[in-house]
Length: 249
Image 1 (cartoon, one colour):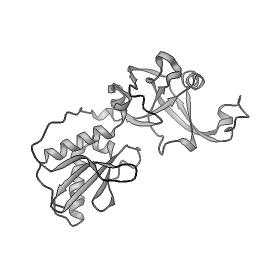
Image 2 (cartoon, helix red, strand yellow):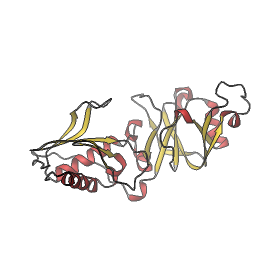
Image 3 (tube, one colour):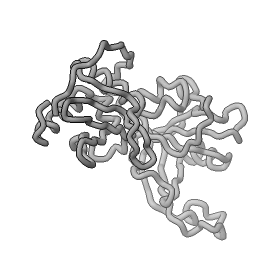
Image 4 (cartoon, helix red, strand yellow):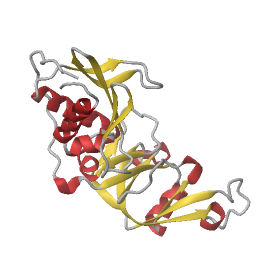
């Protein structure tokens, strides 16, 4: 697929991420005092298996405290290293509630180190609904709002800058209906048509594999973490992929 030269460019500022700051962090919610005390004093946090994200492996857990915590609520104040993972029933984790309706359900038990205060609390000014967020230690220390922890937007900006550096025609938030995502993150254009790019939040799975995945003709899914680490390498894979499909770049 041949890609067209770009129109006059504009500069996009994006932060530099040192290689030692790519440590994975799972952000989770604590919405009651008992669970907070268990994390702080007993050093563990539980996630029901039926509501767990696809991947829970991370090196740190950061806790978003809801509004029930008053002045400390609606923000992330603390994080802790994750030491071990276990599977257990709720009855095993909370034996003082043997008759709870979910007593026999399975939970992931995350054993934690000491809770540590963040350099600065991370508020949720937009008060968006939060379940789980995968992010990096660098983003956790730098974020000024919870929305800054999502990696997709930063990855889109980095890939956009890399595409423009190569002088290729690109458009952001291109309207292409795809399930619950009515806009593609980026679209690259050439005389043979359009290459549509969707950027997905990382799952930390299979990062050694190629971050370029074809879902259908001229549609790519890209891993946000891979893009943040090396957008030029991902863009090279995109171009090489179009060549292997029999289209000239």
